[in-house]
Length: 88
Image (cartoon, rainbow, N blue to C red; front, side, top):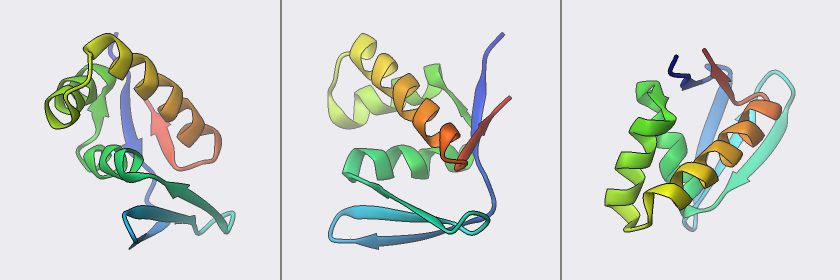
């Protein structure tokens, strides 16, 4: 079964100098993402699987699929831990 990741609605987003800042309105915690993290965050607007994100990421940033997939998994786990994404 494929896991789908989506952003939670209780967030405010701000972009400053190539960085994405995400405020979790429920916990008032702020998470800072680099350029690639911000790109992934924006890609989650469409509710995506690791496979879909990996395909898009490899095209956008010219990175190997295996490395991209592993990094995406770790990144999404971290976003889930801080309450910014949910998996289903």
